[in-house]
Length: 186
Image (cartoon, rainbow, N blue to C red; front, side, top):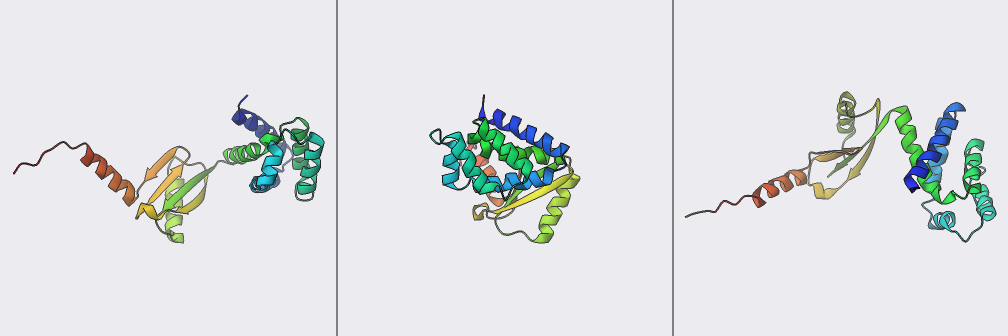
């Protein structure tokens, strides 16, 4: 079975339990904390290692997360480790966040611009996105800066891309000239 499928199934189970127990926001905090924690190479390699036995992994996870996580999140992680699926914890945490946002109808839009956008510009873009039919009920904006864009911005929502950058327009213009086979005659 693929990693994506495994992560999706476990994340769905955790989400269903969190909904039932009315703990969705708390579990989301725990999964976000886990995603940050596995950025540590040592923890990531420990989770993926087939050499370290299950009881040692459970012990390490309990020491690291027991006082920070909700009882439900810790129980879930102990079940995952007990089943030998701890190597999928980073993917499960990411998939949980994705399913949480789908359940709450939150779209994530990534805005990449050449310079820092003003609060007014970000608010205006957010309002336009909410008014459009391509987003859910709520929009979470992530801003990035890429000086190579020269000017303008690029908005990514899921698999959709809106390129209003100067670099994008110059690239389109270049493509038009490349296909142009006209010869100048004097």
